[in-house]
Image 1 (spheres, one colour):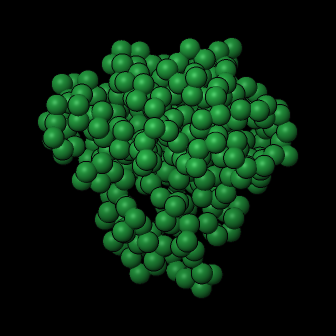
Image 2 (cartoon, helix red, strand yellow):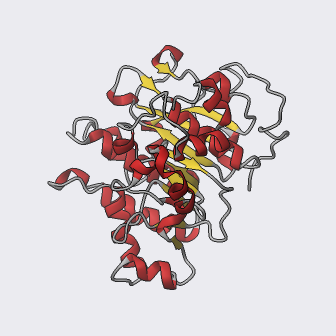
Length: 326
């Protein structure tokens, strides 16, 4: 079920809404009508660890691309924090007014303590175990995406995922292979009821003990482990090929993650444009892998790159706003 959108957000007429109108400082709780629907979500979770929150141009591109590709879905951007997020001065987001033209795009504050109540991770979130952990920011990011789908269901996207095609799936419970060994957590969908809820409950129960491990068992490793158990498989390729008894879908790598750390540089090389076109021909999303790719910047004298080609088509407003310097 999706909330009906009154107009096409990609229309030529641009109507800017105020910060109040787009609900930036409104808390995302049970009283929010958005929770009635199956939405597409982004989560910004650095606020608890930084005095200011920044949404950069590439992240704004990811948000715009999702709104454009899915005009009849709500796109919800959540700013997670333990303390009340009521000061817009905490946010450096030059594109927020620009993106306000999309009537299916909403911004909300996610109160961590209240959102975790009644879930397997209530004690973890309400304690200081995450905040004080050396890998706390990474753990919070991975925990929240699972907790969000556990509470409300829908589709989750990382803020470095650009959407190329409408996010429509025959099975609402899905993941994508990230490598030949791992399933990814940067693009996934799960229902808040039925098998989706059961799968998430198992994942969250494991996360209760996140700080008892020496290594950083992130979301991809946990999800891969849970998928192999649930689907009675030895490797994720088996799940891609033969499915999982109809309970969930695991898409091949090219669907959501056509690039990895070894080849993401191709997106920023003007001499590799045709190669990029071929790689993404059947992709629904492109995961930019910010940890690796933010080191690559296009020089003003460079020609078109795979990323600028994608940005011009899928986030043209942000692309123009930043003069193509993404």
